[in-house]
Amino acid sequence: MLAAVTGASGHLGANLIRALLQEGHAVRALVREDARALEGLPLERVRGDVLDPPSLRPLVAGADAAFHLAARISIAGDPDGSVRRTNVEGPRHVAEACLAARVRRLVHVSSIHAVAVRPGAPLDGSSPPADEDPDAPAYDRSKAQGERQVLLTAARGLEVVVLRPTAVLGPEDHKPSRMGRVLLALARGRMPGLVAGGFDWVDARDVSRAALAAARAGRAGGRYFLPGHWRSLSQVAAAVSAWSGRPPPRLAVPMGLARLAAPFAEAWARLAGADPLFTRESLHALRHGRGVRGDEAARDLHFAPRPFEETVRDALDWFRRRGWVDRG
Image 1 (cartoon, rainbow, N blue to C red):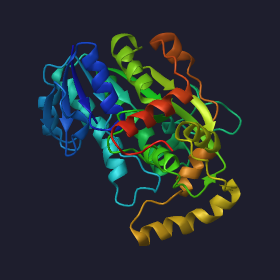
Image 2: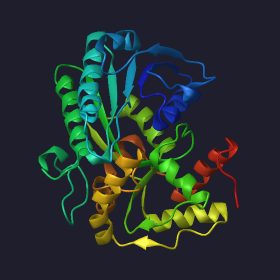
Image 3: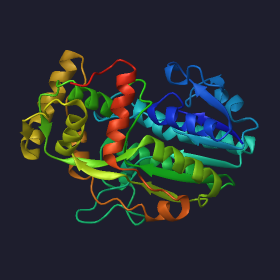
């Protein structure tokens, strides 16, 4: 199989590329700027951008399957419109390119954030799209709209499978990701405190295996949730502490207080030119991360997430091999 991959240099992309190569597939990767995650790998690179439709033609030409992973993640709104452009127009451009090139199947990696939270109800196939919730964060709305664009193209003849992973952790986090930076800060003993709350965390390698299974046997038009394990931030810190030998942060800020402080944390970060420790959007996620149903993925894709502690250990071991963190 010749696989075309967007977002190949991101955290999930780095894992998917390696999984494809391990199975003996030929890989063609779209590269925009940063390609550290692809160094030394036997693959074809195509310079381009999901917002530049002509650059996608050589990416998908002759491909048997395409994997669309490119996205812009945001916990601070969409002040310049780049979140919507990347997450809505990007999927549409990729799907249109696949349709024109007669690619057999497109696996669109979306997000759990594409669906709206209903108090007391699990996230499953009956959950409404996030853009039907006027209070949903900009990122969430963009992911719902991106799915809609891809599925509209599918109605014209392209086979599409949509995957909705929860928060991704694991090795091959080259940039690193926001949560990768959190793991590093905890392992170095540099995290001043935690917010009371948690989320569902899934291993990037398990999502990659699900993507391969989706290309082979996923139901066309299917939208699969890929949950891992729900853990509070305190439990995440405890898992990191077990690896590093450093004590976890003692300060745990109650959710109510964190919500009151979030606008000030965001304003301070803008003035300082830094990422905020938390925002109203990240707190929204931490309040609503429970109850994700992965039954369909288990049945159709044989999806079975590995233990959470294994994911944290392997991520930190990978960071250690790169010299980014030492054990205490």
